Amino acid sequence: MKALRYARSLLPRRADYRLLKKSWRGDLLAGVTVGIVALPLALAFGVSSGAGAEAGLITAIVAGLVAAVFGGSNIQVSGPTGAMVVVLGPIVAVHGVGAVAIVSIMAGVVVLLAGAAKLGRVVSYIPWPVIEGFTLGIAVLIFLQQVPAAFGTHPGSSSNAFVAAVQSLDQVAWGTVVWPLLVVVVVAALMIGIPRIHKQLPASIIAIIIVSVVAALCALPLTDIGTLPSTLPAAQLPTIDMTVIQQLVGPALTVAALAAIESLLSARVAASISDTGPYDADRELVGQGLASVASGLFGGMPATGAIARTAVNLRSGGRTRLAAIIHSLVLLAVVYLATGVISQVPLAALSGVLMVTAVRMVSLSTMRVVLGSSRSDAAVFVITAIVTVSVDLIVAVGIGIGVAAFFALRALAKSGGVHREELPGPAQPGDDHIALFRLDGALFFGAADRVLERVTSVANVTVVILRMSQLQVLDATGARVVTEMTHALERRGITVLIKGIRPSHLRVATRVGVITSLRHENHLFEDLPAAVEHARSHVARELPTDARFG
Image (tube, rainbow, N blue to C red; front, side):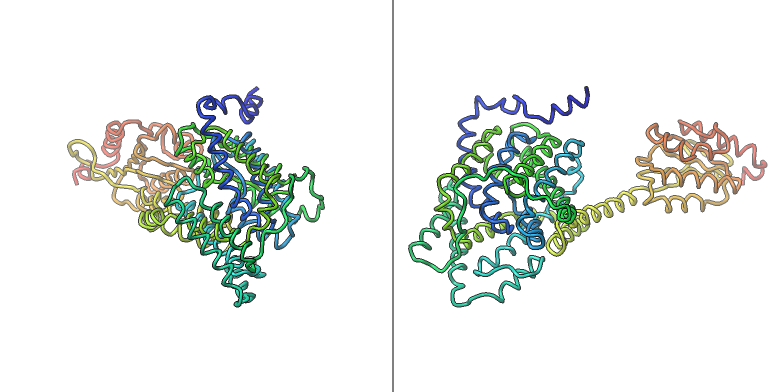
């Protein structure tokens, strides 16, 4: 029954549209607005990935609709994104365009299974500097990928975006390069200037219309998008070749990881800036997995949640899933009514859109905050960004998390310590033969050796009291260190008393052997006065009178 209830929680329900009676007008307007904004991005991301403008448009329609219905966010808008384009480029270069649909289906299945396995909350463990470094790296890659089209050339042979951009410059026809560069500059200027006139104007689509009309009237030597289908293709399984499938397992896992991370991050940000309620992380993965599978069946690309389009949805008044559904229907209408016109849009215009989009992904104020917060956070941010650009997106996230974990463990290890304290109350004869140590902070593998050395080096004492009530973290290594300390001191004839093991630590302490390492079970205390009294009585029995009085 529990499994059945969980399965039902991952499916669409009436509550998804509880705000519809009040918000349907805003949802309709937001859906149309997002559709207009998404059109140039869908085309541009499709072209930039190597799969073609058609694939980008199909992804925005099919994946956007499926994710809206089945996803875990009420206001998220899904489709092709810049991060996914960065990953798909090398896949297309190595395996061809036909691999995109296969990878989309394979990755979608992985993301779907991750949602069913309740892995949605894993993304919450990604540190903020890693996310920002990852975003900066993606922005740089998107910008670099547009350099060839901006200069009217083709990308170089390298799989590295920077190298490929430099290689493309060798093919530049310097006599005609002014035209694509001029288109990029004009598009960028319009996208920056139009919002200053009115924030609600769709700057990207207006910029594309203006430069496309001028290019057509003046017959400028520019490369266009090319022929687009006037109908949505029928769904079909791509040709299955087991050899190719085996080769695509690695890329598909990379795409799945990226799709899950980007979608959940986008949904989390959207939930934090909206009043439409929280998102369901596991259901979001299920919805995004189904979206990528559906997109692949129609010949599209893997999809993710898109924070830019989601933000436009919110600003335009979207409050339910209807807005994202309308966005897909608007794009579907474009396919049936306007592909002939769209096919004449210059590729350089799409490059201009993506270059501006890439620049807007980078927040200088956020960068200043991250770089100024601490040296460790700044290092994590910079390393993640560099690895994203130079190596691989998923590798960058892994390395970023690893570096962040290293600094976190180092800080945690520094927080743990051992301090020798004076015995409470008035001094009594023989107290100099009793050592009271307070363990606090975290006693785990990062701090264990330092604590062990400090305690076991004590000399000229008969009894050692280990005060453990202030210890916040105790792992198996830390418990093992306490056991070793006890054995080492007992071998020297020093009696060890332990005070205040927390109930949450008692299980690991018992299993590792802390309790059994004591000379007697009565050497475990809950109160410090009782432990000190026992230590003093022990000293009184063990030492002659003249030794107790020094």
